[in-house]
Image (cartoon, rainbow, N blue to C red):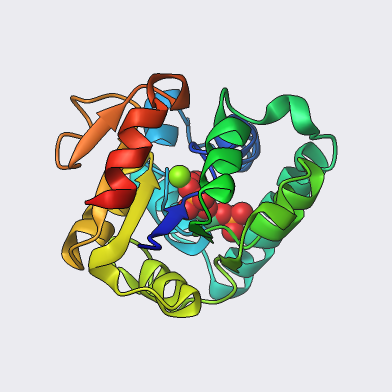
Length: 217
Ligand code: B16
Ligand code: MG
């Protein structure tokens, strides 16, 4: 049977959290707000708008809507400078191997990311053509943990949600997959991603036997 394999981008295929961190830190500091790596962790899988709202809440700072829009655009311009220098070396370990295996097994593959820059990043790391469909922040109106991004992915693949498997590094993303009975596979720390059906540190821990089991069950 053909299953739908849906991959998150940031934290699953590439580690762009470090670039989000640099850009958000500059922005926060310009407002007199400190910004730590722990806070950056809490922005994983969170939309750009919600990320800025959270930073302002943490700093107890309020700004006009006009300033908010300006800051969002400045943050993204800085982030785009970092991603413009990305190349295939930034793909996380064994991601191409798993994608190639799924392709060899004729499975259906989608991207399901909150990022509005997802397509540009996939082009930079030369993985754009590995996906049958791409759903990103430009295609959704509701952020994870709402399952909209994964439901659109499933629909575009022509696979029912219960036959989809989601790879996610964020708690919100795991919850989004669970809400619609997709199999959730956490990539990261099992203490943080304990709501996932399975958790692996990274793709080097995912063997062909496990993937075969996902395909046939
Ligand atoms: P952008 P994912 C998410 O991507 C990131 O984890 C999150 O930190 C970021 O704020 C969000 O994309 C929006 O990204 O500013 O590029 O539109 O993990 O869902 O692939
Ligand atoms: Mg992510």
